[in-house]
Length: 271
Image (cartoon, rainbow, N blue to C red; front, side, top):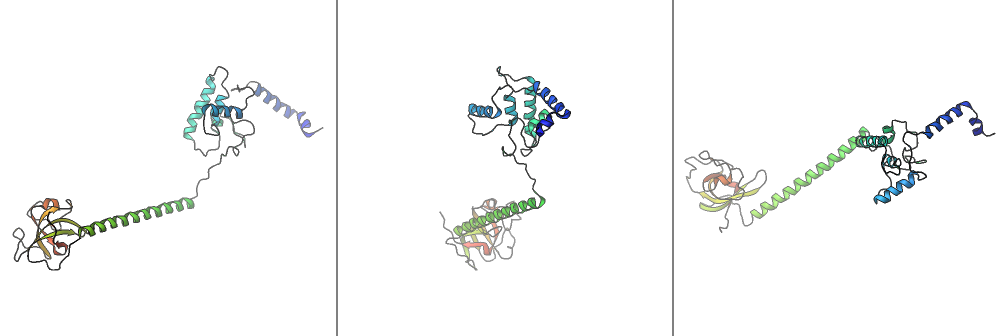
């Protein structure tokens, strides 16, 4: 007599067998697709929906397997399905404990997937348990992200510098700075050097002996200029006037201000 036949004769085995037969004879949620197994049912559902997926969630397949000829699932089945839907919104995709097992409140056996049929395992469904990254891995990722941000910042600053330099070069065409501004009144371009070098306006420089600015002497290293055109209207004046509210190049148009000699370029074409 074989070992299995010996086991069948033992009281413990017979009690377990009787219990399982009783459970199978009156299941709480009976399977209603006859001889159509889970695999064929799943393929039929995918084809009907013209889906590009290769599988369905276990609780979706479980619910469909318990719909009879009437096409209407029992209230108890719908209750379990709705509970599965709620759980699917709150659980991580890497959580390998089946949603259906949680909703049914029954233990999941090792190496199987409830609601997918006999012989289907997590491995065959490519379900892999996620591994939380270590502190060292997280630190390395943060360092890599910081390095990328620094590189992008340097690239942006270099690009901005090139734009400013190009603009400055264009503005300085046909312009020759002179250590000594010619005497008299000359057309000029007005520059600023901070935060980058560029032309901010055009006007006339008054290099006249004994000239005053609003009855006051000019600051050292400056000349009196009249602003005619604001190239960069919001640029701040290097020496705002004490006798007016002008603080920007635009506000100084039509008036006199003090301008550093080394930022005055004599000569510009009048159109």
